[in-house]
Image 1 (cartoon, rainbow, N blue to C red):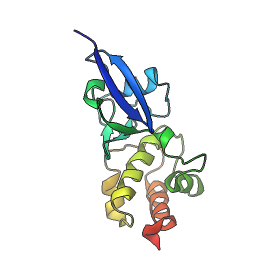
Image 2: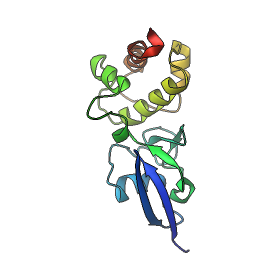
Image 3: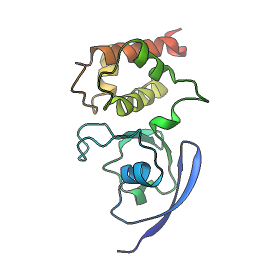
Image 4: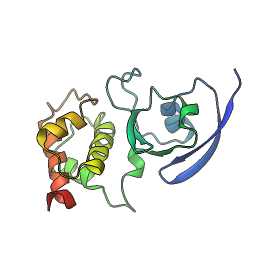
Length: 159
């Protein structure tokens, strides 16, 4: 099959790439752009470790073909911090021990950021729903939920 030229904006930087039609967005991010913060867990869209924000919505980058990302704006975990300052979700994950092994953390933070972008003051139930597509084997989710709640309070939603 013929390779295709695409243009994506990842973390506010534009890229013109030639990709195979079967290449995933996850492979493009990790292998072509060398942004290795996005993790591959299951490769089947079940664990959420590869979650990124594309066009303002969370997606499992292992299920999105790179050609489907043509013309899209994508944010990865590397694009969440602002000029070296951690995003409130990142900061509260550190402060409230929202991670253990850290493998699911990038995807969890991306889902939490997307949630807070659309709902700056979520209830615990809304937080649980917002991260429902992300699987963690280590934490039992209590500290993750506390971290996201603290991030909401640290931003305008908690005022």
